[in-house]
Image (tube, rainbow, N blue to C red; front, top):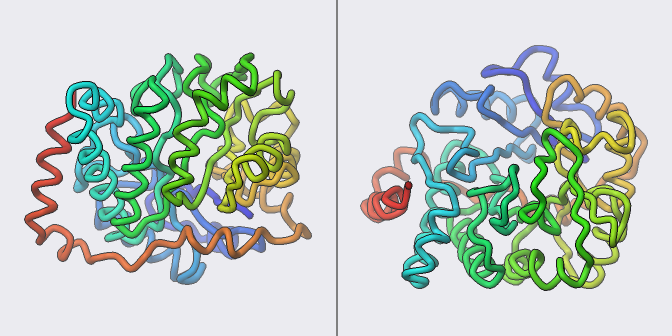
Length: 333
């Protein structure tokens, strides 16, 4: 039920017990866990030595300003650079989206990361949190590029996670720092913001991450705590059968329901399968909060495990990869 954060670049002794605690199924890595490609590969190996081969390891490796692993990896441009290309050459933009996704996914799989929380399916409409992390302001353009990105991730052996459902891009506030409220009605959100999510689901994205944004015209709770958004709309109206993540319970916008235990409980009661406890200081409370709960669906979690990946040496010995990288990195503003 939990994906937990770790403190540093090596696995600490006290973290062994956290990785093997009941209810913990994975770890998420950040820049604080990265020093070099060799180091982070060793860290991932040590996590699996403790927790087992089926334990999930994940990261935010979107490109642009949200790319946790940099030195030794391809510096990926933000998704908005692909959206900008679409305005002059839609076919090439779709190709770049697939290539960007394949580069990211294949590099992560080569070091043992199962999946990245990607792609951002939000619209680029002035959000402080999203900005150029999103493809485009136009729902139809964003939808086509999200589909292409999901295809590219799958070609790289990686599951896709659409975020931040039902759409964070039209909300100015950053949920990392403050409460965020979107006053629009359900019909407008369905027509615009949800179009890229539906496209990603049609491309068989394995998971969706729910936003900490409140949509009071639909429910007075943030989407990740809302059975209306998760069970009635996402699973009911949209027919999604994959895994649902709650966003990080450490974020400022997550605190409206109370402390860490209340946040974990609210996510799971709303229908989330997995909850992110990204900061190490919240992990003990989060682990305590899931004790005695019925485990999340193994059928929804299993597809998040990465397909067999190339070794790093085998990956870089590929002239086609060089061509992909040259085309994608040329988009950097």
